[in-house]
Length: 389
Image 1 (cartoon, one colour):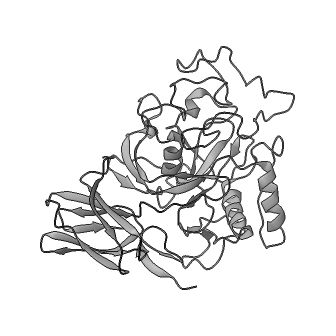
Image 2 (image 1 turned 180 degrees about the horizontal axis):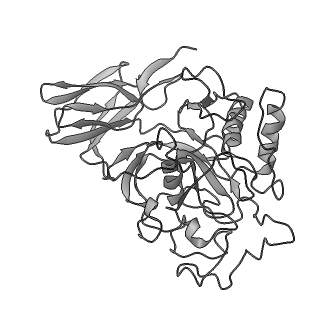
Image 3 (image 1 turned 90 degrees about the horizontal axis):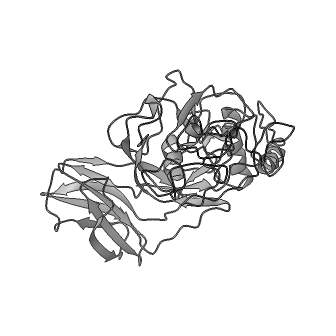
């Protein structure tokens, strides 16, 4: 398969019209248009763009990525590929960000996944009520990606495991759960990463995780810190992807829903304690009575509660969800598609979302917790993400 090297259609930033911010990768087919190069033609930025001949490309700009009102610089019909565009209409300034899109392009998510659109959000504890490691609040730009609507169920886990057993995979834990329609539990971080690869290969997708930097040896066995093809198939979400997805397109809210900043058993499966948290309005304390029975874990069937603004279920409570990142301190400055520390600072990998035996404080959008990736437990699950082609 022939591959072309080009830049993703994320903002290209001209800082003082002197430097370029870009992310380059290989892909087998072009979807959205993309920058390949930006230089100065006198004092004006000149952009080389890959775009489908006959399509309409819209070039937009802003001076600050915290802005949501991108200005349309040009609408143009692509007559050749690649093509060159020079922005002579925009006045020079200390910095300017550009992006190029095809307004008529659409990308249908894979079955069971939701599209999380590109954008900047404020990451961290905007209420300043949690732990110090939820601060500082800082702006983060996240490229568009897909996210599983539901936590991985025991049924889906078992389906992929059955395929993997005849395809050279091995796992530390077999996986368990309350029932087939409940989240899979008792698996460690390495199991989840290998399972993502197996799920990808089962569906004919490119695996995301490898044991070598050249991305030739698919990660199938053992416990290693894998190399990542971020543009492959299923993978764990980054921590910033997870929080952006949990917020559902809204800002400044405590939980994944936006009609209130409080929580009860009508919204999530968690351990209630209204005496400890003013925003926990459940009338009684303890495990959710709808799911507490003789045998732990007290999980609920996936999708038992209303989805958030992006159509995602159980982003608060039920099963604690592992992310890709090592748990590290937040920066204060703006970030684009961060993936956490390169090595473990000593706190393990990040988990998000709370679970059936965690309190309301742990179900907040900003709550983060680092733990040993070799540990599997009866309150830990996951969901998959995938980069939009």
